Length: 466
Image (cartoon, rainbow, N blue to C red; front, side):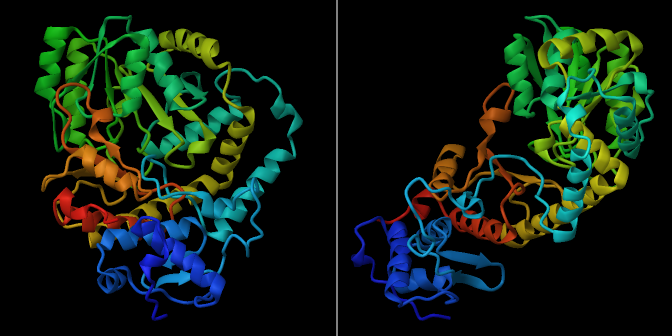
């Protein structure tokens, strides 16, 4: 380890920026060279008589500039890549591996990094490209017979066996939700959801001018009695649920509760819209609501969380044949069709087993990241499922969602305040922290340690020193 003792007075920048500046200066002078291991953050903070978060932010800034790399269990190492040595020129394209900031704001699956899996994914793309020209033409809505066969095979992993006439491939879950709720409810009418729910549902309700009403929840999801009471009082037109690894609270509605919810929906003739975005992640999750009440349930099996968000595809199962034509008409008017290129790729990956390999990677990596969280954050201080892509972090010790969000943003860490998930009433002092996407395990560990240190004391103690 390099016995590095920077003189912060050499830089007029704020102290965290000064640390990154001095790493770059010492690289140019030769005092630091590629491969040098920098002092651990806490050790350097004590040496410089500054707060730990100041050093953590300095190392993050240095990593953003491409000056250092961090490795779990090994430390932070100098790369030797100053702008001059990279041949930097104004307007030159940045290296995408170094352009990303630690960002937990998007709830995406971990991205595959295994060379064999990535090569397999590329082989599928090459096979699709061999038939490229026909895929540049307009296609019929809902997918070809081959695409629907692949969709049926994929949905069968969730215990669903609908006829192909009820399966449609759509350009993502969000357009499908917009079309379905446009069919089920008119402006001013009421639809129900969890009181803490997916923010996309709030946006859709606002766009369609629907009255979205949140139902109270416990650890197993919405309360059936509260659902029944809302049906009596409000005469809702539909119930929206994200029942498996719910975004943002990560809960999964158990089988018994699903049956109770379906019974209430059947009694009051309320359609269920099941957003099963995360349903494929657990290896043995509860049966979907569409398997319990198929005649009442619109099932949406998106591929964004189980394969990749960039595919923008979702498999929709209509509850009956009468619902098919209005849905097709609404989707055609708004979206025309799903991209034939991405649809062909998804079908290929499902048929040749690549989709299963990606899903296995996502499960394994999500579990590993949740284990990192468990090792860094105190037990009981957050809510998560062992394979969820995010944690739900209630705040205490004087922290508010506003102060915590501001503190983490200043360090390149993005969290999402509870406001965007709260349907009605006061939002709780909590944030969603996402663990997936392009962030590496090394960067994730540093970010989690930064948050954990901040949460050890009140906001005043975590303020950066300048």
